[in-house]
Image 1 (cartoon, each protein chain N blue to C red):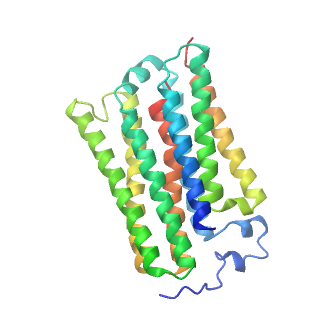
Image 2 (image 1 turned 120 degrees about the vertical axis):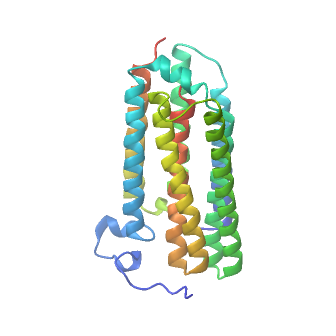
Image 3 (image 1 turned 180 degrees about the vertical axis):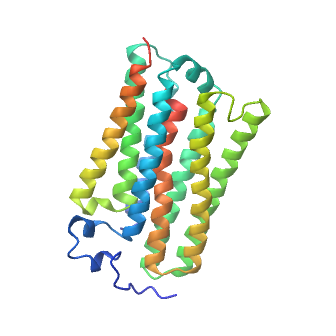
Length: 89
Length: 196
């Protein structure tokens, strides 16, 4: 990996973190709140993917990239399901 | 310290017959640790959300007492620390040992900044009379974020160790632990601080 690739990964992480913070300052209720919650979790998944693939260098292995995508995607889906089941309109 | 890689089962070059395990970069035992830590934190966060389902109003009221801005600042601090650690490995692989140590030092300093912000957060909660037994939300909050902070402390110690024993293999392994700490935070932060 090159320094440039690491800095690109960092810029993406900072951008995604700023987007997450911006999303959570939007006051919403009902279905819009669900959409924001889903957005926050999707952004978390994207950040996790960047750390795994770039910093932990998993992107050279298709098998492990998919395995971690599935595991973290499943975790975030379950998290959203639990959140949505307990969040009223 | 020598940067020469020794042939060991945890070395990817020595894992030709290991199937997909041979595709994991770096030290195999570090991956066992990373996956087990992800499972532990994942289970704790799922438990947090499951308990939240029994009292969503109570959890929402307690969550309003957290400072999202401090959490967001700490996210930037930790990902920047991760960048410094990654740049240390790049420098070491290019034979620039002192530069690598400098980047590791910077990563450790950002780790300390993370802990200072976290300590400030705990201090303000304590000053408001909020403790681990105040409510189920704060029990989870202190246990999960405290456990993560303990990993940050361990990570700083590991970064110091690999700056001293600075073979490429040691540095890659120590920095992988630091990235795991970073990875856990980007999953923990939105669930505990942001989902309302």
